[in-house]
Image 1: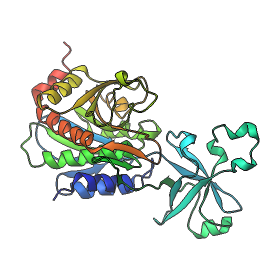
Image 2: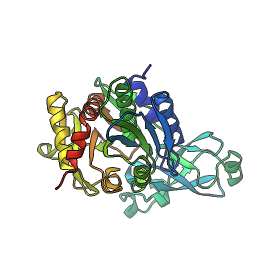
Image 3: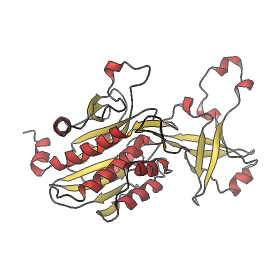
Image 4: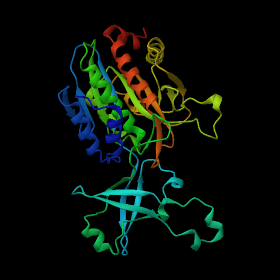
Length: 358
């Protein structure tokens, strides 16, 4: 029986999976899709569930990794120095809880610390504390004690945050909505498509190391060899104070975002138009986006082989790349519904037309 949306989002967001250490997320992906297709993995760890069928190879893909840290050094006093894995704004790191995962799988809680402002020169108190000046306090008193806990250099570190409902019905806070919201949607869409007759061969996938430069997408595309790809993402919301409301392209509770452009990829115009038409005809709320910054796995995916037509569907998430981000489940369900509806329309003739230039 398929897992309900809230439970699935809880399981995926609470999984520990910084870039390069996505094993918990991969295991959950396989568990939820067990029996729906044949699984394979490329040599970087990206995973594919081939649901079979005939016709064009249609890839529904999201990245498994989240931003995090790694243990860079251990001080004689038992504190951990760390390096960032992915894009962190130091403003949001200090005094937060983290979880260090050892090679044995044990998880050890720590707090991000720094020299207190009471001991800083006046000129430094108003500045952003650089990550290099922070450390992780796990309660140890010596390097030897840290090592006895099983912590070694290179161990992955992730934010420690639970998936929780908020005061407004349908709003949830969690870590890693970028991009566990996409992973959950890939699973839900796949479960719906599994019980239907299809006009194509559906591939469900999770990539690794997106947060370090779309690395997994490059090898995944070579492994899966899609004819067309739908990338599912947790995209940064732009509906909070400081933005012009009439320019918002990623408002929470305004529907799934259909991204047409970002610095890493110009989405296939015909596929983007098809996504928009599908949303309109299926009465799925959506918002168009042309992004000045950022990027997704489409940046590598669309360059694979002779070219792969791509479109990115997103759930607006406030405060991504931090310990606490916010989504509305209505946007999530809109993304799942549009993913399924779009896949249904990608017949051989439609996919051939996406890349017909002569």
